[in-house]
Image (cartoon, rainbow, N blue to C red; front, side, top):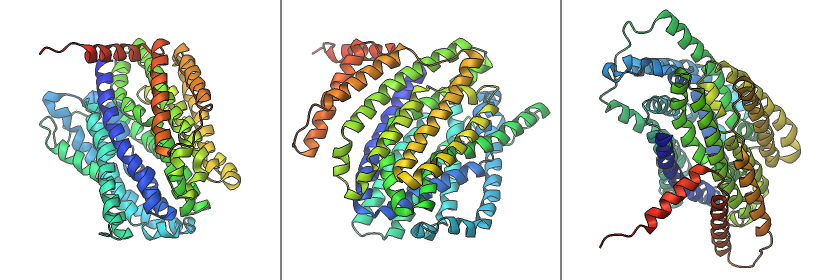
Length: 495
């Protein structure tokens, strides 16, 4: 657990540096400087390219996650696995590009209400290539116990470059089309940076495997890849279907409003991303060694610690929701409950620990395909039911309901099959403290400056939450870390 905690902490730091910049760019500057429809275009470009990249990958990142442990050998430069993957994803990109242009007219038709987005459809293919490149190399580096590089460049570098692009547009250095080019380049940069990093590695071979892949392994790779395509597409579709459906049903404006308020609600899940990536390789090794005790231990601890962090962030977000929205144009106020429902959905995901990683690294990984397809159906059905009557709030509520169903399927399976379950008294204590502090916050209302209120509310609530959860020993890891930090701060320094 030591290395997991160390990388999680480092990944979390860079993630939140990225979040800080993202809060300035996505949370404040974009809705202030751009029209809602223009924000919607930026969101749809990311949504479509993310899904397209998953199709183009032909499931090979899943092969890397699951089977690289059999190739890992530093003395033999991992038996040429890297080059094999590059050949597969480039072939997949060529095939997927041909399919994309065959569906060109259909894409224009379903996005008829998003006229501005249709203008920039060509950029989807360009961005998809570099997204695909990042996905594969990031997965490869993670298998080499380096999950931090991907986190740094995806969460931090991208947002820093986006901030630069917004600044150039604001000062009339570039037009909106120029901004879109820079925006797409910003999201493409992590793929290029990781490619440069992988080229400089001494323990990586650019030759294809020779006499290493047996017929049995080949069959398993094809099987994992096939299910990886389905699961990868379904997974990315799930994350982006709400935005795509909003764009086609209501238009760019609503997609833009949803994107901004969705971003606020998604801040909760940021700490979980680094942990999920880092834990993948440890779960793979644990399954290989049949160490069920280690799996159960990481599962339970990851749930308790993630839920603690997630509860604090949701508390701060919801208490300050009105104040945050008052800083944006009035049109964004209709997204207040998007923040709540997306926040709850992400908190639920964090409470589930890492059940998706446990299943994906086990021999029962194919079940995830079924679960994810069920989730995709849930999202489509609930969005079709709720968007017409509730608009963007309906899309957020649909995400919450679908996430609940998905986690019940994954968690229920692990409990029935292995008796793994992440829930403990820790989450109950954390919930009581979080709800109690929210109720107390309702008693305080003032006409002070909005910044003073937000800083004051956040400082008091955070301090109270950290003290109460420490006293209640909500998680042993938090207590241990707090004690070490306190000793380090109070340690007398030699003159």
